[in-house]
Length: 212
Image (cartoon, rainbow, N blue to C red):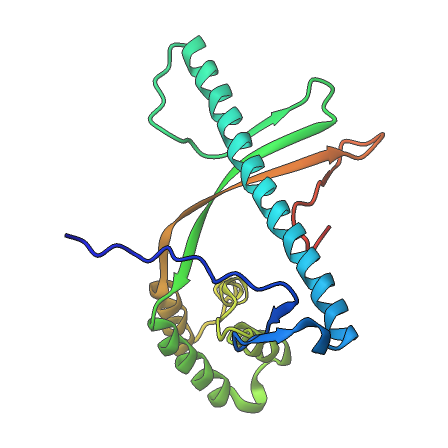
């Protein structure tokens, strides 16, 4: 028989106490006022964020369902059999003020071969030395710079593939980059846009805290 996972809830906190990060109970009257204020603000914002996250997940599920139904109705109208989800779809209001896009994007990552590419590109820069274009040097430095999580930014590396450089070692490096790209599946997004008044341009209605 498979072992069941424990579903024991955290022990209740007695009245008049607070739990500190180490899990110890601390009498509330011994907690500084500033700590109480910070706790109240963080607790409220976290609760609001959890609710917003729930609403966003519900909105995405609803939007994808509605768009899928619309596609299905269109297929039935023209007696076309659709084999599952199909690419990107745009639906718009009758007046063109709003449009919603269902977009599929491929998830790609780098394999260990990216390290070989990095070594080859670095060798090119060293060999070219003073003769290397300063802009190319900057592009290479940016391409292999890692973020706070130690990840290489995909778009920066892919920019290197657009450079036309007639050098065998450089070409080998670009081949290593291509070989290091691996697909891990696809992600589906829902994007909402509103038309800018008096124009044919659209601006996104942000569902991202970083751009809201």
